[in-house]
Length: 381
Image (cartoon, rainbow, N blue to C red):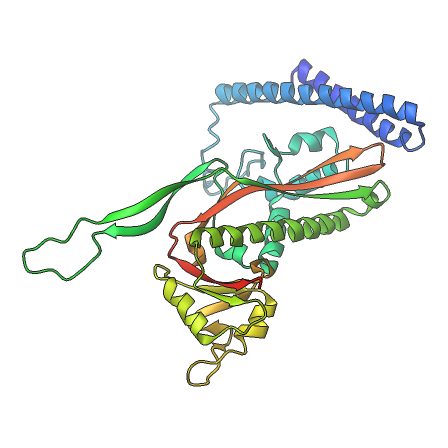
């Protein structure tokens, strides 16, 4: 470790210790002192950011120098030892797959959220331009909670690109459809109508505030709290937006019925018929429409339309984000571009004596084919 790197780590420790002193002092300070302490904390955060950036540059240079001197190849797999040799497993480092799923990383992440991380723990975290990467287990738990509450979010095609994506959306075949022709006569060349849809992302956020006393809960309790709160609100918002975009893409409803009126078998048949390019259909509706409308529906022969959770060959799923409408779509046809996966950041509000936790994600999606689904519109009046 270079002399400069040691100096940076030492200064970072001093900044961290001073920040803790400020957070303690502000609880009993008068308004004038609070303002001074707040200014000092802001100045120290600026210095901290500069030091971390310099530290990253130095560490990268040292890593490159070591690799050059030893001929190290990070991509070389561990060779199987011959008989009698001891197999020495390499230490898991930040650039290796699976690092964010280690206990070391999870502990460092939570210690950072609770504002008591050591210099080594801060150094162990993986940061991007958008913040600190969530531990794999925590990210999976949040998505599992979202999927349980909103099955549409599990069924769609989610692309974690991290960048803007342009999708070719199919509108219609204007000419050249298959048809019967006389012998020796060629069919028209197919002319498809496509439009380019740019998915640059929509921001979704959820903010939680905890008092200093509340934030002293155990690490496990804080994890459960953040997972539940962030999954509930982010999931609801993203799912609602997804259904709204599907509704926009499909343009016109298969059937429009008055809100509060009974859904009919003919309404369902019409909707299924309009989803002419779908390969596998799923029905999404609120619990009110699933249990109050679909479960009580019978076909032309008086037989129940839904049996064992399936209606007319399509799975029926309850999703509150569908609102008043009933969607009959091919969910895999909807592509969601995940520009920023779910992340959590925190900051202190020393005037209110609270810690603010913010969950954030950036995503946008669209139907690849506007004829891969339909919806039944429950009109307001």
